[in-house]
Length: 352
Image (cartoon, rainbow, N blue to C red; front, side, top):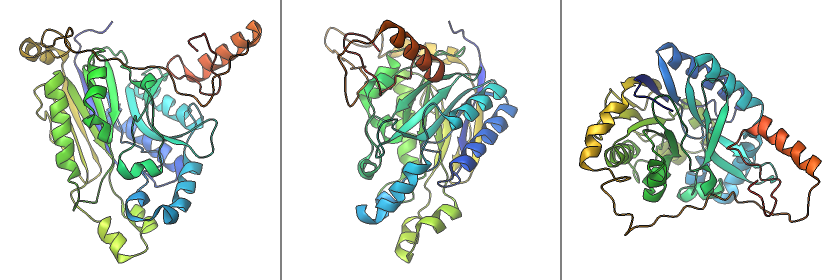
């Protein structure tokens, strides 16, 4: 059970070592350690940080981008796997809750990638993952959709923690689902979006993060990736592509209080971090006015239902020997944890 304990939190803005999984994982571990050295006990890293975001979808045809998709798939990670082991160790050494965005490979398909946020505990446990429910616009060329099984909050001493990736912070029902589970700390991570003639990413982030904090009376930690010259050089082969990738401002990281306002100076475009103290007691008074998961709602009028069943390509109905079932359950518990269902085996008539 959590208490009204104050703590420091960190929003980290950084660029990945693009499509280099090992180097980006190592960089993530360094960033976690650096934030912990500033006293942070909740640390948020950007969306799709390991090993980077599929920018080619926005400036190439699907055929031209196919080779980049193949490269991203090969650089994506399995969960759990060697990279999650390194991140877990970094969280344990930092004694912090850590949320980091990754490209997650499907364990059964050579063509499926999920945009996934991993949640680690201060003891190094991989507490769970959230797969982005709906990839945004051109992202559909790269990522598959997640499901309701990962719309969960995680207990911390400072209040329940939830997370959504980038554009799904616009999804009112997804946000309400987290709030309805008692969310006090919301982590929203994003990518640097340089296509500024069409979309002002920093302003869009401010609107969404401020709205969620104000509506839910919660703290929102925003961690955004940064754009590096190496990424531009790797991806761009024409002046037009370089122009598209040069838009500024394109990244924003900050921390919002339960009144919807920033509680510390934000970071725009450059690599850096924001560290601030949060206090759950600040959420109490605003909820006297409007508590949308309590007295300021009409549950006799509104009825939200969330399907938490994990989607899987097949559901087997044949019986499994009890010994083998227990063996597989033990394997999965030790490898993945209770909130990481394995798509490879589905048993009809069980909750597994």
